[in-house]
Length: 81
Image 1 (cartoon, rainbow, N blue to C red):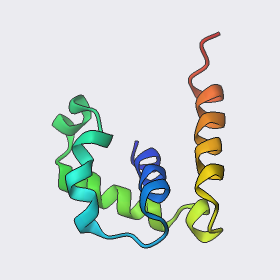
Image 2 (cartoon, rainbow, N blue to C red):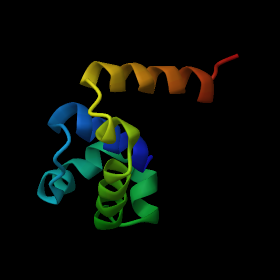
Image 3 (cartoon, rainbow, N blue to C red):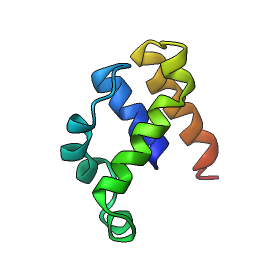
């Protein structure tokens, strides 16, 4: 989930990560059931780490390519068939 949130951050804000931007958004990116398991600050730390280690940041992908990648992964990981 933190990797998906990191991609969302990248699409909205680009390569430069700022923890102050993440904290207000954690509750809209992470489902309530998962927020009960870990605090928003722990999720924020995981998002920062996922963002820092991501291929799309290192490669400076265009935001549309990141969106396409999310759709591609969803089609195969969450198949309806």
